[in-house]
Length: 237
Ligand code: TIU
Figure 1 (cartoon, rainbow, N blue to C red):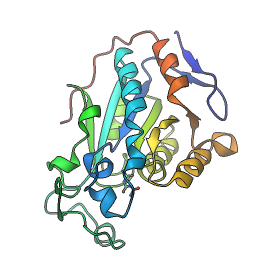
Figure 2: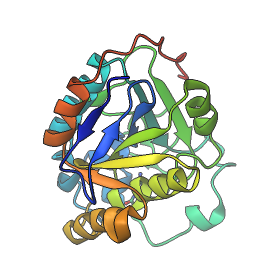
Figure 3: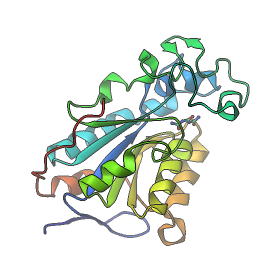
Figure 4: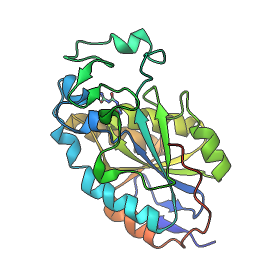
C-alpha cells in the first residue's frame, strides 16, 4: 500500500493511509462565521474565523481530488428545541439565544439559512453531513457508524472553533481510537490565545490528543496518495 507522510507534523511525522483517512469539516456554518449570527451574538469578532476559509477550501479540494471521504458537521437543534438541554439554552448572556430570530433565521435551528454551511465550503453532492446537537461530532450522531462502515481509522480535523467543537470532537475521536491530525490554519478561534494554546494542547505530551500540521504540509501529502476508488458513502442530507 502506498502511504504518504506529513513529515513536519507535531509531535512527529503523521502517515496518511489511503482509504482509511477522512477529512472532517466542523461547523463552518453561517451562524458562526458571518456577522449577525450566533457567534457574534455571543460577543465574538467573527472576522477571526473568516481567514480559515481559503486554506480550508484548498484542503477540501485536495481531499476530493484524492477520493477521500469528506464529512461536514453542523451544530444545531430541531425547531422545538427538544434536543437542546436548558443548561445549553440558558448559559451566559448572549444578545440572542438559540432559537431566537436572527439575521439568518432562527439561530442554530436546523433548516434555517444561518444553520447551513457557508457557500464557499458547501458540501458536494454525496458528501456526508452530520447534524449534531452538541459540541462534539460523536455525541448523539451517526458519525461513529459511518466511520466504521467506511473503514476509517484516521481523521484530518478542520473547522470551528478550535477550542470548542474542534477540541471536543478531537477528544471524542481520540478516546474512540482514531488518529487525528488537526490542520492548524484550517481551524479557527474567536480568540488568538485560545487558537495558539488549543493547538499546543492537541500535540503536547507526545501527542496526547493527536497531531498538528498546517495545510501547506498536509495538501502535498494528500496529493501524493493514490486516488481512492472506493464509492463515497450515501449523502446524509
Ligand atoms: N462549533 C462550535 O465551536 N460551537 C461553538 O459554540 N463555539 C464557540 O466557540 N462558541
